[in-house]
Image 1 (cartoon, rainbow, N blue to C red):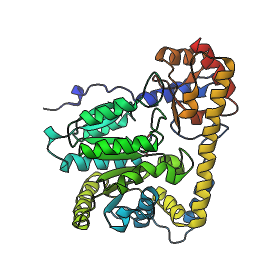
Image 2: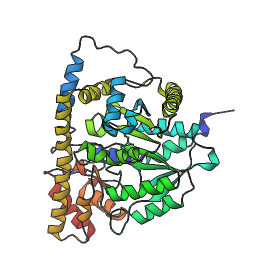
Image 3: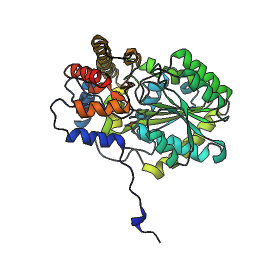
Image 4: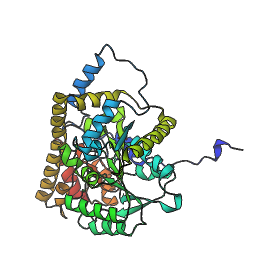
Length: 408
Ligand code: PMP
């Protein structure tokens, strides 16, 4: 006999708890570095000019309606998404080895992929998903919710505040054959530490040798370096190498479409004479899973992204907007490192500019993070992660001085 009073209290989501604490703080100098969304130089949300333009066009279209999309989503959106992440001349696209479904942003894409693997990828006793340590915490919840077990591979070196490449490599080498390896395509969340192209090649080699299955999570294409192909390089390399893999693609950050939930899931089958038939069967199963989960994806964000991706002039403006966002963040990295070095703040700070993307793993300890919150009203997660987007020309001096004080 079920009664809801047996349900235990769940812990609060740490990030949302942090946001609430920030809102309660009345100090005029308070700084929010927890937020996982882009902010402009005035700490305000930024609607990309190209998104505003596309939005106006769609809104004024007399034929706009609110009918359901197909189960797999808007076809012109999913095909443009394939080209964006794989590159227009991808061998996988030429061979028609890719199937794609529009999802509820990146989270929904990770979920659909995990659900598919839970259903079709090897028996339970023979499969484990590997996540970087640390990773986007939702990976743990999403994979466990569908019944996939998981472990982690070393990723971040506390000493260098860069990549623990040997730890990463050895762990993948020692994992059971045929494990699922979840990889952040670029702008690793939460560390901001990415692999070099040479390191990616070595990781690809060991993944191939161990017959592992690569699962790419790409939430920051174009947002990291400002260059879409550069940020898509790792995925394109793996596809060129003939891997069978899947990709969870988010448009939250690179289009600023956070709440519109535009995303895409891609399954790329390995090259073989039977590949087209395989991809058809995979697509048919994904459609059934999607149907039972969400029936069909939300339309509006995908319409905006699709219009931009499929219209050359808008696409060019989008690339401009991406350079604005990534450029501002890179400037903030330079400024923060410069100021800390100028203040002679104990420690080394080169990792601030070596890291890339929205987040930076500062190396600040939990104690220092709490001190920053209490003394200076600066909010960041306990692991010392800051969102670079929360820094701007008005608060960067204040923040650098606060860090200097907390570290001494
Ligand atoms: N993966 C990673 C690594 C992320 O950082 C994010 C965004 N925080 C996502 C997936 C998915 O985000 P969304 O569902 O908003 O697209």
